Image 1 (cartoon, rainbow, N blue to C red):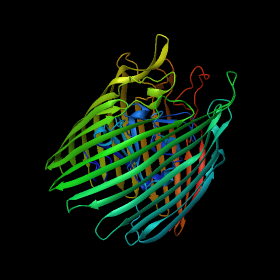
Image 2 (spheres, rainbow, N blue to C red):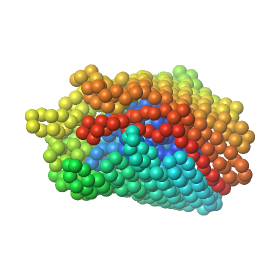
Image 3 (cartoon, helix red, strand yellow):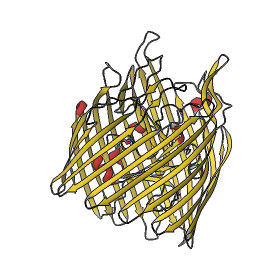
Length: 576
């Protein structure tokens, strides 16, 4: 079951979308160090990093820009309003129960920036009465140490989860011959909810990640935080309403070391997003209507003197989910009115046909837009306040086979982006302008099976992200990706492996700076050596492959950002 695709619980087939789910079992088996590691190689997902262990990461969904993917935590949007993207690298996977990745435009439901799709992280929803404690400690290569503890459960109508994690690592060198660049992260989560006899539910969520990450030439202190309160009310038997008030913070304090060009500097970029959202779901027999309104306000507090430091957005949206077995129709429309760049209307239409109980054919069309960031609009000496949002339209055709023990999903798509925002020189001014057009074509195939203690999953994707003005490949996107995961349960043991491979990419718009493709193999083993106790061992990049997915600018030296070589981690945990 997934909810991110339609804002209503649907199976993957019923969602009429290309969707992937990384569930709790997969997260526990693979034990990734960061959300970036969990997403790497997933269908339609490409990642570029400036090294590992808390270094800057960009997530490209279906070849669209890093600022064209929306990231949510339990329905609360988290991003930096100044640069447009969230701090993927700072989020601790042990805080979350599952990850949903919806590929394709979702502007109708989520507004700006949902061009490539949506990645939503979900915290745990305890369903067992009584408290359930857990604790885990471990460490490994690069003097990495990890610890986590949580307490969750239910008491009558009250559900709760309290979690804390700590990661500390010396890190690795991110350039050839450089020093190791360390990273630390302290994360905490509080989730509370209570369901009354009337069916009304009140809840609170608070999550905060903070720490320090070193880079070539300095270090950064960061904070990623979300907080929200919500009320769900069953107005009638067929009408439920939810009101959510939330705040998200992305804070960064950068400490640059002195150079030949100037002294040491400290710069601060803090952004705050406050949202009031009202969602309604009305069931009409076999059909369902989802409608609501949203008010969003962005604020910036920085040592940089921005021309504007706040903007608001008001939106209304509606979506119809209609089931005319064997046909199904999904249609939606949204209107956004933004203080900075005006009005935008987005919509989508999806048609499904159930060929038989196991196979569903789908076709869809959707529009979306990417809003200009505060940096692109207002950064002193650089911003262009006349920018228009990027507009996109996407066509998709898909076929899914869903069986008792296995599934497969095939999708082909094309996305066209107009008014692409690009930085260029015009006369004496270097600034962002609406200049380019992009066309992204792709094919995705994913499959998985659960059989006789085996869990197998595989995906392959081909993406052609082209700048229509030049015919060149968009920067830092690979065109071919393959991922295979295999796990086997053997009594008290579980053994597994993951293989990820990508072809080359380019680091510049002229496609002169080629970054070679790579393939990495990870191995893992788990042993339940006593009741409620388990040990996990993971071996990453077993063959010690050297690879880079980004390169420093010529001004910085033009060196490749290196990823870690072979690494090993061991953890021991107790879970009642």
